[in-house]
Amino acid sequence: MTPTLALVLVLALLVGVSLGLLGGGGSILTVPLLVYVAGLDAKEAIATSLFVVGVTSAVGVVGHARGGRVRWRTGALFGAAGMAGAYTGGLLGGHIPDVVLLVAFAAMMIVTAAAMLRGRNGTADPERAHRRLPVRRVLLDGAAVGLATGLVGAGGGFLVVPALALLGGLPMPVAVGTSLLVIAMKSTAGFAGYLTTVPIDWALTAAVTAVAVAGSLAGAKLAGRVPAAALSRGFAWFVLAMGAFTLLQQAPAELRLPALAVLASLGTGAGLCYGLVARCPLRRAVHSS
Image 1 (spheres, rainbow, N blue to C red):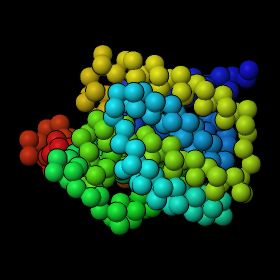
Image 2 (image 1 turned 180 degrees about the horizontal axis):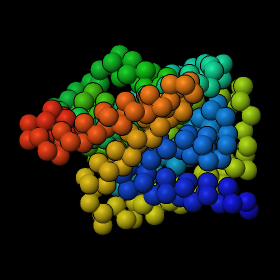
Image 3 (image 1 turned 135 degrees about the horizontal axis):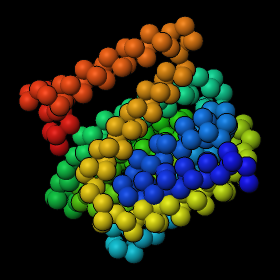
Image 4 (image 1 turned 180 degrees about the vertical axis):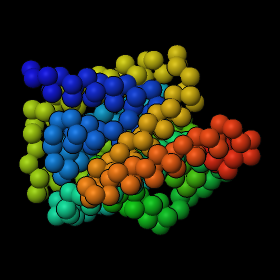
């Protein structure tokens, strides 16, 4: 085993642990790990990430199903629409330049970080759980989230959970469990789309997947012993920083230093506002959930 492969597997284990602890969000780090550490190109990294996310989510569904926290009909409907979108995204992604895919992925990281900072604030409507599902809206939302998943390789859990809670009237624990079914379905379809044009290093994919699954199981056992809110917020800031780093890497060389200076200024200003100003809009936004 080479030092690079060993580092990739250690980081994949940490990604799996974070996924198990948080119930989502960990997969957003798989693509940067595969691009910047394993040295894969963007398309192969996204395709591999979809496989890793799909298998890890499928394993996670089992535990939630045993606890009665999976709504199969709602998940299958949302997931079927997501599969159509994800397969289309996977087909398109194979023909899009790497720099465009990585910029889109960085944007998804920033959206995910913002969703984590705000919290999963989709509120279930108990009455809606006993009404007919808004099928057209579920199909539309599922296809849109699936398209994003297929293109950039992120499972979209922080987009799926609020949608399931709001549209399906699911309690949050059930929405989380059901989202894993949706993510597994979408990731499988997106991976199938990429397989038509992108070669896969199956040995690396299998190793990363096995380690990530082991990490997610370990993380799930640790979940009750770690302050979830503080962990989620710290992880979100890390994802936000990684998104900014990915964007910076895709900028032309002559613009990287000015862009870094702008990002540093914005980050410093935001930190000072959040830490020192009682009525800081950023503080209200983060704690509004």
